[in-house]
Image 1 (tube, one colour):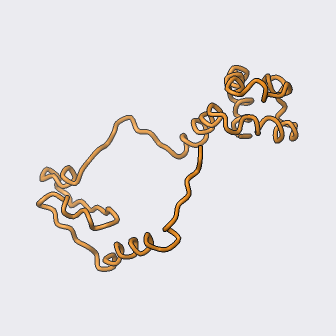
Image 2 (tube, rainbow, N blue to C red):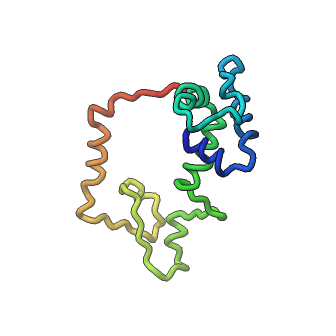
Image 3 (cartoon, rainbow, N blue to C red):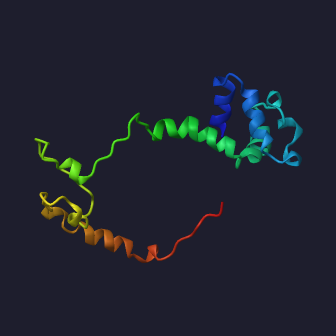
Length: 149
């Protein structure tokens, strides 16, 4: 959250407006006077940050979206101007001159390959499906927990 506030104070042209939007989503009774307005927020005040500001805004969807849009997505989710889609049929078209090599991780989709394509399983990878299945069937995978939102 500190990253969001640092960016808000240093890089945004109108931090007051953004902060006002964030605060507007909170219950009026839950907001302490010292953090109601952007001009009262002191990021150097450790007590204010850790005991008032961050606990109040930690589940705020606008703050979460701000973090995702400015810190996570630009680094982790590259976007392309055009959507590229290809199937095994496209990759093996007779119009292609070069050999195409692909790897799907398992050999269970070989029946979906185009008729003129044959699958060549490498000897050193023949145990892969059994290893994956063995890992999935281990006792620690018998249970799951869900997180409430």
